[in-house]
Image (cartoon, rainbow, N blue to C red; front, side, top):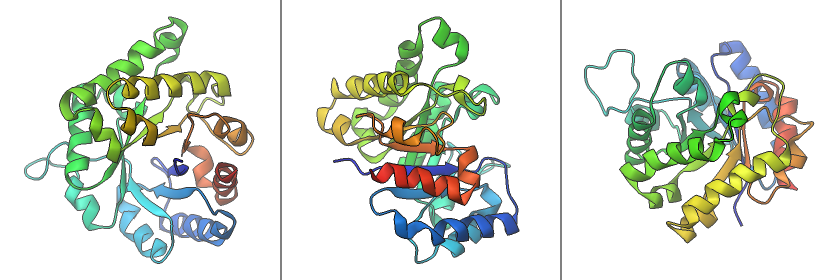
Length: 251
């Protein structure tokens, strides 16, 4: 059985004070969560402080992005080894905001995925379609292409030490959410695509839903057979909401 994972993506939000309050609020409620793994992904500048606050807890630590390069003259970039050095376990790779706002290609994203795994990080690979792509009926082609970039560079077996997050771009920060059946359909497609290449890996890989999961819809989404948790945005900034999703993942 796959362990549920609920990972909070804080995006470009917070301060030292709010990070402390958020982590302490989550830690205080962890006693009610027995099954799901919880993780938080703060902005780079707050990762060391959050690592200190998480010390001794079961909450995982992640980053929101990384460089595809290991080291060197890449001003403004942060390498995978730097993230492991400050205690990160996870790193988000290929978030839709990186792909669609900053123009990061599938191939570039695949390079980041490989860099993360080489350093011992667990990449949380984001895949998903734009609204117009869903309306055109090409969701599977888009998600399949994004997965193929990883498979071509690192092989299907690489997903044995990675997490996938399906994030319909039209449902991020819009208040819209894919129905449980819509989300399950894409999750099943992802697992089926991997199963055709490596059945064991497909059976074990966690596939998270990343499109505006909140306390009101989490239980219904997480009841789907191929939805193994959530990559949480807005609700991750409120301890009560984040914990409520974690509790739903316990069921």
